[in-house]
Image 1 (cartoon, rainbow, N blue to C red):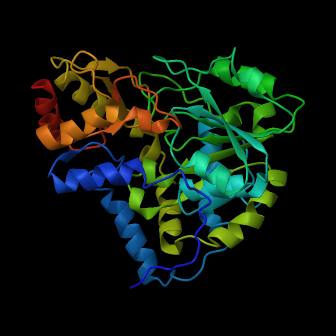
Image 2 (cartoon, one colour; image 1 turned 135 degrees about the vertical axis):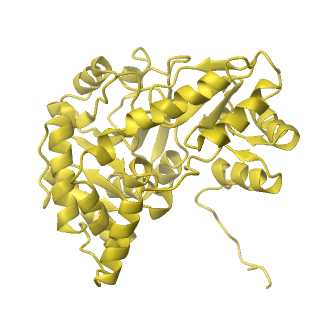
Length: 385
């Protein structure tokens, strides 16, 4: 087929294919162990699969309401109450989405217009900035302080202007595994007081918390909650990333604006899966034991690479582990990641790809949401480097 000969003006001229897709493709081409893209290689719950199959056979296969099916919204409300002791109205303050990425894009589309400023903390998940730019907004990048990846409170207040409309936070944090403390949430609450700034809190790893730490959701802080969207993901919690089912929590006035955009972006989400997850949520063990499950994965992986030359950066959440390779090589992160794939058969993500400008720290992100045999094989390779 011939290419279109007219002038094509991209709204995202500086962006290419996602680093996750690139590294997974290379992993497949070189038959490498894929610890790059964040998805499990083990089976999901048989009970959950049977529930989906049940609702398909029962005929729940047509459009769901744009808000999502009511039983799921009701059970999300109950889960949030049990977990955080906070009330969200299932009718007016909860919406089901086609994954967290769609939720994030919809929030940004609903509130950001030309020249509005959005503050993003780097390293940052790669979908935030493009969504802002597609809607005409301007991204302002705040760097988290390494190696703990905490908010720099000397920098952040200086970045806020009258044009600041949105601040995006992410905890537990992808790619670093850091978590935002209660004290930092209180400071954010104070900083945004008496402003029109909306908070988008990406909490898709809310149940993947380790070392007896507690997830500090924005919904725990009343003055933050009244200006905040909370984004969650059942794909992350139930090991089913391919189902693309997420949810949003927000006070009614914010949710009303969200739904105006949501109906035209995706309209509705997978109906039988919504009913299945609604049933699955009735048993708290299906989500409140996920942290211990993944902590065992993290500990197993870390134990097996202790004798390697990589420096281990503590991960307190998510299913990602950062490894510092500065004792091994001086080459840049992308080249080192490519070398690992081609020469050693293991794929990871260079952390520099989570910055808008190259920021080299000799750091790679490895996903440990894998079978123990996969992690052991990967660790054996890493220990030989």
